[in-house]
Length: 255
Image 1 (cartoon, one colour):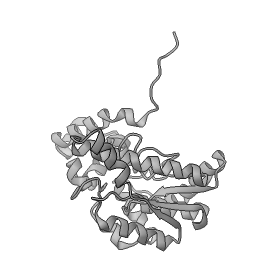
Image 2 (image 1 turned 135 degrees about the horizontal axis):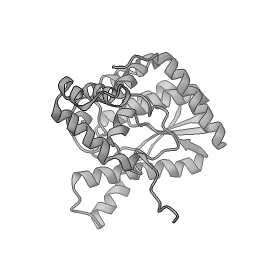
Image 3 (image 1 turned 180 degrees about the vertical axis):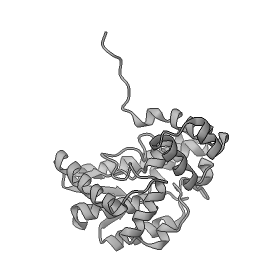
Image 4 (image 1 turned 120 degrees about the horizontal axis):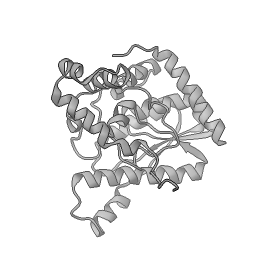
């Protein structure tokens, strides 16, 4: 795995956040706090950049969300001494499924909830005149493990250049709670869901493969001999199939 100075990275990210705010004319930030590692690290870095008085933490639980998720999000918000709100998205999400999509499968429901959360964040962005800070990491962005116009919607991605395993190390540097650092990563979109189980690969394996593939430019034969053909094919397919999520919507070229 790559070796980078994560203390220097925290400084770089803080300056990046300041620059994003300055260039856009905003002074405040909103972070959707899920109780997970990524949003917790993002919120802590935002506080370092603009001060706790300029950061809003928004918790958006669904009725089937694990109660620990909200508890951990509140724990982080109180540790950072930021203002926070809890908004239950169950009524707004359920009315759609009840009236128009009662037969929706678990994936559609998860995507709908992710987009419902972002609708709330952007409404509060207008209310508080605050930019929405993204919480995506490089590992998940590269394989498209996010909902387009859901959790991928934001003004900027402060930790989008860091692998998931690096986020954990930064969380330790920032002094975030062990309850957040040691829990299994989950988008909490349905009961019992975990990221690694859904992806079919651990973050440690994923990060190493992505690093060797994207940064070290290791050839396919070497990658297969180091890992397995099944895993390399899986990651390559995920990257290819999610390319559209990492680009602006295409438009026709002028003739």
